Image 1 (cartoon, rainbow, N blue to C red):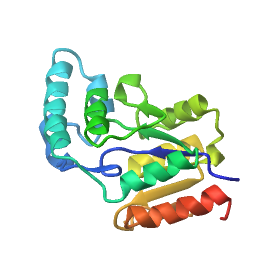
Image 2: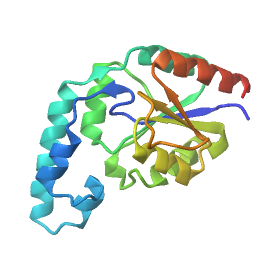
Image 3: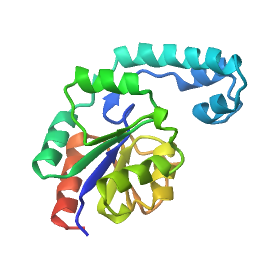
Image 4: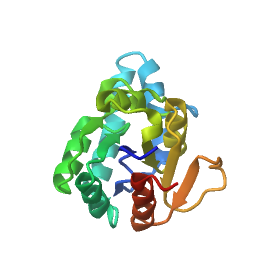
Length: 196
């Protein structure tokens, strides 16, 4: 089946962002839980206080973000070939808007945490498929973390592309690693032609 949609993670995938997640989790006291799920369960006013801490770190990192080399070319290529593009991120709408404007990027669909859908659940990916009227097997997911893998698998997306160094704890026939965006672009070209 030919590729018709690409679902991108944002931080660490489209842009390089200097997050120190270990430090952030320690300061929030997440006890090993995913940050957003942890915050959701907290009573007020603790929830609002800790959310502000998270937002402060996010804002600082967002201002320092740089576009991953070759990403603008890949996105342009997808648009030229009428492939649907989505951003699925656990970041806030405000930070997403800032980054898309800063780097002049355009997507057909953006799902941020304000939707109430966030990874590692597959629900934000399923929401994109519904909006695009596409089947899971017509799409690929591009990310950099376990959350992206879990979410893509739960949504039934057959191709999971990880940008960055190969990690031994990421395993499965559905995962492929790409050290550069240009390598990823070549793979996407194959899928668009139906060569896989």
